Structure formats: structure tokens, C-alpha cells
Image (tube, rainbow, N blue to C red; front, top):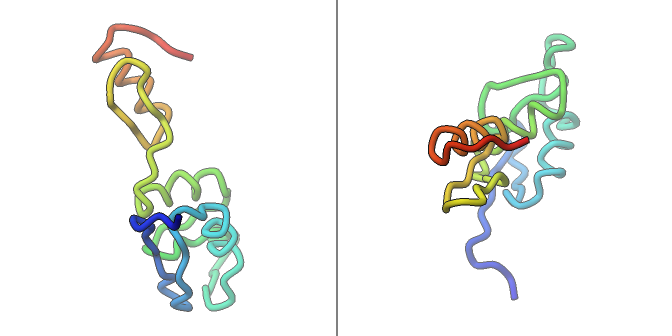
Length: 101
């Protein structure tokens, strides 16, 4: 059955819609959209939803979580979920008095 909660984000340059579940497609598009004007090498990846730009795909993947709501890092001790591993590690240390790798 199709997830009725599926949401979409559209490219602000070409208006193409993307499922927020297809992060790899979003990453590819931030690099390959033909309507994005890239002034220099720092604009290798340009966010399709805001003015953020970066040279590497790892940071773009992390940035896109702000728009998709993805929170892949889950606490083993409570219901906390975060979009960044460093925030999870800080949460576990502060809230549970433990360290994780």
C-alpha cells in the first residue's frame, strides 16, 4: 500500500517534484538540474529549496534533512530522534550520562 503520508518538495529552479523519501534523487538533482546557474565550483550542489550551496554531497545530504524532516539517528534509551549524529551523541551524553561511538 502507498504511504498516504508521503510528501514532496519541488525544485525552485525547474519546478520538478520529488518525493522527500528519495534523498538520492534529491542529491542528484542538486548537482544536475540544468536550470541552476552555478557561479563557481562552490556551487557544485545547490539546494533545490533554498539558497544553500556546497561543494560536497555529504553536506548537501545533511542539509536536505532540514527540508525533508528525515531523522535517521535514534536514541537507544528514549524516543529522541535527530537529523545529525553529532546531535545524537550530545543528547546521549547530556540526557543519559553515557558516551557512544
